[in-house]
Image (cartoon, rainbow, N blue to C red; front, side):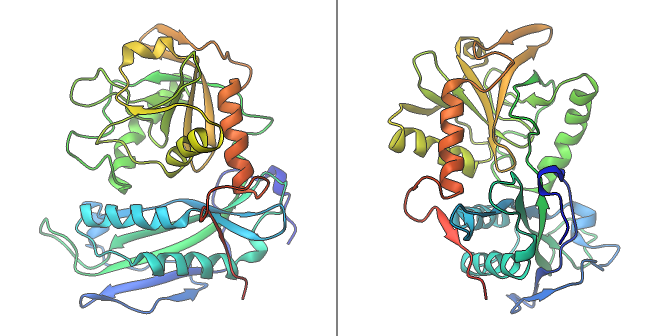
Amino acid sequence: MNIDWANIGFGYIKTDWRYVSNFRDGAWDEGVLTQEDQITMSECAGVLQYAQTCFEGLKAYTAEDGRIVTFRPDLNAERMTDSARRLEMPVFPPERFIDAVEKVVSANREWVPPYGSGATLYIRPYMFGMNPVIGVKPADEYQFRMFVTPVGPYFKGGAKPIVIKISDFDRAAPHGTGHVKAGLNYAMSLHAIVTAHKEGYAENMYLDPGTRTKVEETGGANFIFITKDGTVVTPKSDSILPSITRRSICQVAEEILGMKVEHREVLLEEVKDFAECGLCGTAAVISPVGRIDDHGKEIDFPSGMEEMGPVIRKLYDTLTGIQLGRIKGPEGWIHEIPLA
């Protein structure tokens, strides 16, 4: 396979195998690996009419010792269970979710980038309503699929701090679906992110939809703040998607690095007093934020616009070290893919 791993982008590349399982008559079938990447469905399929779909995202890596591993896939399975229940979809059993990850990654092992390349194999599990639905109600038939695609490093030439803006749009409704990984959440954020990009910003900061005084998240990542005394602070809200990366960073900070961690409501008015800011998620692990534009009023972090702040850098290096096998992490975090 002739791929310049260090220079591939963060986009879709078709690989050889994907996993498919169908839910009909109240049960999931056994599921299969297939090379067919096209999906045929009714023009009236539930997903097309009422956006009944949810998804996950995780990665497979080549560790330092040559093993192919994934990071905490059990939490992705758990979160997809929560998403399915909230959207009135059948739960794909967590043990089968893990089995599908193993099967798909093993079948596409040649697509797993080598250690040290900066690239990874992105894994996308997703589920959607398949049968015709014209009245507003849940579908009766569903398909669970999982494909993989190699992706390049999220940052090229280092993780340079980005500039974001405070959005005038809301990402999620109070008591809505912000806490699950529903496709409709991301559809709602598309206009806001396109608008931000046109204005020269990398991302949006969404505020709470109830009072618009508290920090929530961006379109696809949780916030992490560092106080001037070195405390890690992450926003708490019922309409924030519970990031697996964020939860792992907090555990790393507290248990490995001995830092103080606070998971609490974060008021917009206190953001100016933080020393560092970052966005955390699967794609980039942590993306540093150097400046926030609040309708023409700039919030500049002391960590600056040149590089990651020292605390976020330490968190990033420790977590990626665990993911790549350079640092021993908590029991069960690294899941080795058995190669048949």
